[in-house]
Image (cartoon, rainbow, N blue to C red; front, side, top):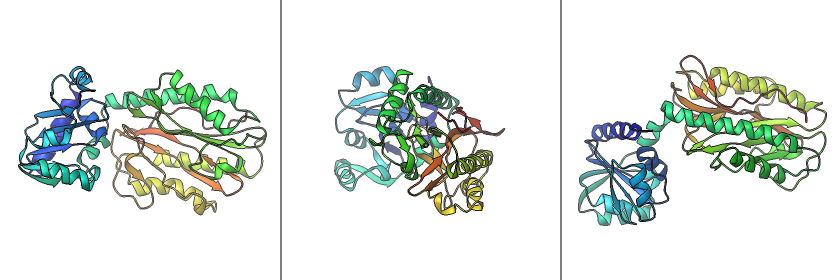
Length: 355
């Protein structure tokens, strides 16, 4: 993405200047990556109010930094924050939400003529609205996720364990081009479907089970997130009705994900469908969340959340109903809020599949 990181740093520099700081010290690794392109386990970035920037990393990543972001001066030092902070005289804004008390003390001790002031979640706010280049990467991550779902369906049958299905699902994502799974995949069968974040176990799938799979591919640093619930054997009885209810709620949530919609109202559009059917207490989590370089980003969609959706904001819409001891249903898509309507990035059918 030539030039895109310079543009992002310029946007941050404007915020830094507006807050009366001389520079911002970026130490959250995901934010360093967003602003420089460097993915590493040890890096920091100093962005001055005039837009100039300096990167710091250790010797393990110096060669990568030279290749990925040659336009940046790179300081090679294991103490990345201290090496950059020592260069500043004046007000130095820092990411307080990502710095421990001990790290703050260590950094403050290394500063000579600088005053530490909180930056807030400025970079996270910049990351909320995605570049089209980012959306293209998310689109590919979701396409891999769709294909992995198709690949795992023939493997699902009575006798297979949840863990076996999860392993095949995650291997398929990697085989199809993912760096790795975007998060630990959820495969919940039968009564385990009533646990929203169930960890796949050695429970064998049985005929008549509903199986919920929540998973996603990581591609070029960007996270996909999709959930589908399928039936193994005859899809009859109460859970079939629950499936139709959740599908209707999910459609309502997607339709409500529009520019200028509030996070609370988007959540309510889906939640009201479920509540009207008498299952308000069985939908215990928020409607969704932002996705990007992290699997959970701003904005969060929920009953107590604030803020409005904007153009080019990727989110998930994932209502569910969970019946203790019996099972559950969740349906989730990743989509991008657009001025002309939501762009679905996960495209697998939401019709109930019986396998």
